[in-house]
Length: 409
Image 1 (cartoon, rainbow, N blue to C red):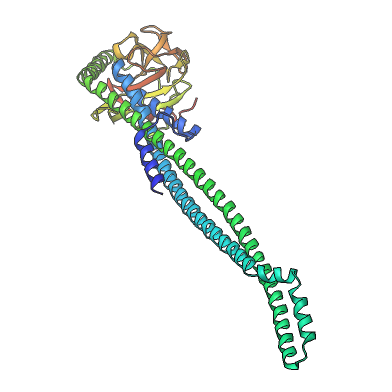
Image 2: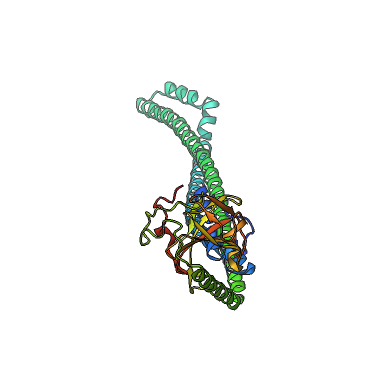
């Protein structure tokens, strides 16, 4: 058992470069991709370096729980395998002891046979030489009745002794044969027990390798995470500066929209206070990937404001005007990339950012649900999507209050 314990410890300390033998389900892979998409959406205003670090962080954060669980499972398997190996070793020891006892019993039985054979050899030899016949002749020739009776008694004793000797030798040989069979069975059981112990030890070695590989996987993920955090930390000041610049650009856009605010009666205007159920159409055929409002920066932990609702959609997907109105902005705008804003009257404006192309011009009137551009990834964007804003007198408000609750087209 000490040999098994030493080997397990040595394998754990030695390390291995193999991968953990644990499968990853499709749902777990999907969870990793969702986490990466969420991180990407929240870092659209970050530098390329911080975005790359964020992708690594999202990946490692999503994978670490399963990797750590794999370590726990592997350690449990090691404990079970070690216990099984110890039990097998004990059974092998017991089988070896039984074999030794059976062999000793056989040797003792064989010695008894030899002793009985030697002790009765003289009697058998005398019988072979006709000693019994001579004794019978002497008895018959005797004229003294008492002497004849004594002779007959001796003859009877001699015959009984012969029969007893034969019986003793026969019994001793039978017991020796039984002991030999017992020893053969014990030997087979000992060999089987030793084979089982060897297999249990081999299984334990495999489990130890799995546990070490799982632990190494966790260590690699943690190392990747630390490296990504170091990169992001080095970019902290620049990231904050970029965010401040985007917020300043948003304020400049707000000022421009206020100047454009001439109370045009282009469309429906605001309908409800932010809980959904508005009468505008959804601007794009996609799915909501990011919400409006304050959120914690996924790397730095600071609070940042996301001024719109994001809709993930394929590059080139048509963007629709949510309601009729007049185009008050159509062109490039820093972090927004290619941007279109439409005034709907009453100081309400809708804006569509990151477009790959703009299909309308400044001052143009557009109809409700009219195609005004295509989804892209221009400006501060990590992938094709529509960043959709609603502004009231230039201030950003929650777009969901103006869109149907189902967010369906």
